[in-house]
Image (cartoon, rainbow, N blue to C red; front, side, top):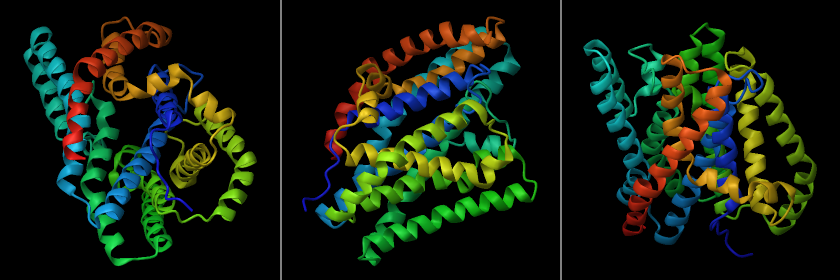
Length: 354
């Protein structure tokens, strides 16, 4: 059996496109998408999968992971667009606001720059306002710092990749159990929702899938059986995720006890389906050019949408439907500028650290 090669799968960008649209619509506060926050968890699972697949590919080819190259690729991918946002945000704050507001906004920018927004929110220590959404970026960056060394440690000491996957899954379950414990003990929703320790399971579920697939741990016969089962499991997964997206609010305690973990597993099922099946309705839908393009600029959409929405609200021009229409249009323009005039230039440099 040939080794697993991920390559470029447009439908995975399609998942990004769907996920960012869910988050953007959720933040408009329209009443018909109470659970759009699940787009963040979809991002987490997909990110964990892609990062792990890349790291294992490098390890299998070189018997080590050049961590410097990995971190440089992450910096080139994420830092320029974030820096652009923070510079624009800071300059406009200085020009348009009074001294106390300027100081507060500049502190928010520093918190976001150092990827600490999640802990600022978790412990209510100057939680960012217009940049509050960067909590999820902070979690991803903190995970990126820790995960490569952890994975390298496991790969060097455990030969059987199924055992590696089991070890990663045990860490994911530990994060889930910690979330259950802290919820049952009355910790604040902000603490449990924003902590890396209580949300790492989403990234780690993706990592488990990455270990299994990139290591060719599924035999040909098992793969055929799995594809048959996915024929009915995947539609149920999509339906369940849609159900959560339209009905479950982020403060619902069931989320923290068990539903977040289910959302992560359902997302992993969808990713698995897209990678094992070369055709199908879901793959066709997620490969739609517009959805794929939305996914390709999703980082800029993520960065800009929340400040745009908050500005509309604070200025008094901020009904839910106005944010859904005008606000989203403005965000797409800003994200496009960010992607084509800033991000792509730095992405070309990643080849130096391949």
